[in-house]
Length: 240
Figure 1: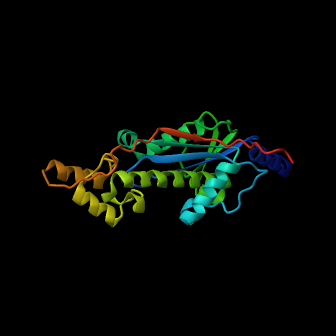
Figure 2: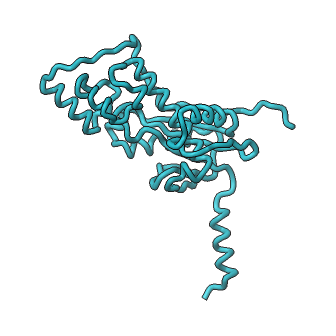
Figure 3: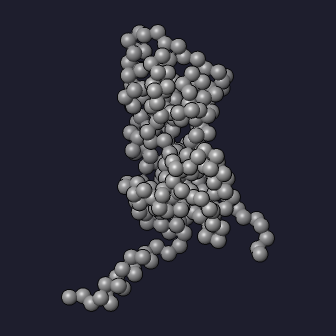
């Protein structure tokens, strides 16, 4: 029988399994019918704490915007990446989400010793990683990542609204609200809709059947989303 001393030592090794930088990862936009899925990775600076970090879904838009700016200003480094609508339709939303998360981690300026990912699945990474269920409410680095991903994607949807105002993207952010479903029924799917999602597929089927649809655009230049966007912060203040 093992001694208590041995058991305590074994537990201690588990606690200290990854000394070094810790990155939090989360996504935004798995459920919507349109637009890319976005992921963010954040390595926080323990010497520059950020008050109010929480699951982005529990925060108001104003709180998210305020914290978004603080994260960019105070974190050691941040990376925001995405998987396109085409990648979602080709690989499915789960695999596209894992792809966006991997891109976010690979885009970090500093390489973490360990990555904590919100949820119960992990992307393929070349560093130690752990999935944390409800991690966006439990781990500050994941909370920060959830805020960056949410704000970034919301801003993309506002750009979509400028190009296709009839769908109401600025309000519902691409989710299947009654307003959005009604717009799909009337106008059909636009180029930013996920064709592998059933409400969009149904709209495409109606178009193929010859129903008359009204599709209007305002912007002369289509909105094009880059595959990855990296944001890093360098603290140039004099040391105290």
